[in-house]
Image 1 (tube, rainbow, N blue to C red):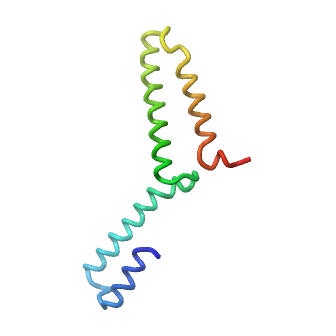
Image 2: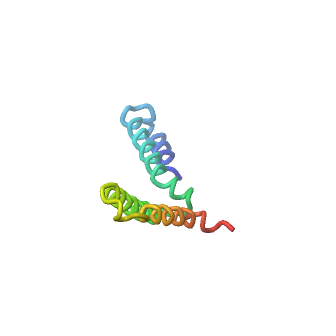
Length: 106
């Protein structure tokens, strides 16, 4: 049961539905439910829980950061990291294709 419904039933029992105090409580609980949804909806859409999604996204950020570093170095010293960015792009594409729901499709 959603938190706001519990709050509404509690305020009806208390007979204080129209008070400012309870209105603020309802808005705050609605905000918290929306915030919870924002944190959990996308990971569910890609068949991951929040922790797994966070770990995967941080790993991808690490790969992108290394790619940015290699690109900057390569810009000034073309003989360093000549194919590193291409390799990283292929690795990232493979990881994305095989993550979450995508790895369960046949």
